[in-house]
Image 1 (spheres, rainbow, N blue to C red):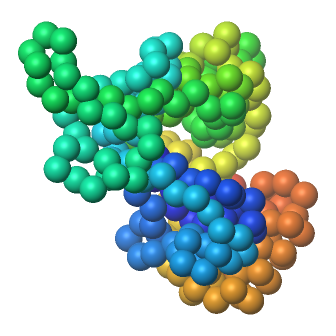
Image 2 (cartoon, rainbow, N blue to C red):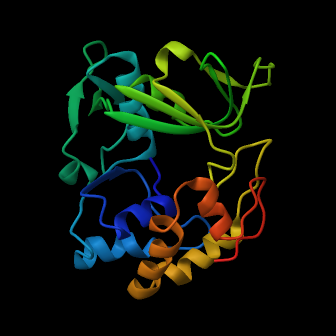
Length: 239
């Protein structure tokens, strides 16, 4: 729903043709420079964008997870999003006559989320700021979770959501897989990375050097963390 620096890397690497989202930026810092460059200058390639409200995107995932063709909300009216969002229609409520927005369901080919842990059967447990990760998994054709830890038994955690093994396609143990964000109880937010990313991504040459060294030049996530001097449990990055 809210692309930040990981999306900026994908866009700058030329791996994105369209972005459907409700907000995009470097949290607490500013713009996503690779995103802006692609939209404004088609570098390294032009991308199509479809912008929604947060509530609209949540309703789309919820509808997809529920097996419904669309979701409804009291939104979009009075905004110019209706002129640009192709998957929104105004409808009349059959019970009250109110004008409502209908948003087309999202059913991703693949959804990938990061969670705290999974058991050996493939049940995934996630807690903290969950957002629409549950709906993203339930709406997808293929559902993948990376987790901080694989355990023999999932111990109860207040507020936790369990994604059952039968809805999951694959689970992989990837410590600090939420980087530069965090997984509550396991890793910390790498604030230095977000600040450094503003400098790196604002220059095309600096970005290309960074992506070549730290992403293309590393075989897996663990090697990526090593390349930026980041410990698996969180810490200062050296990019």
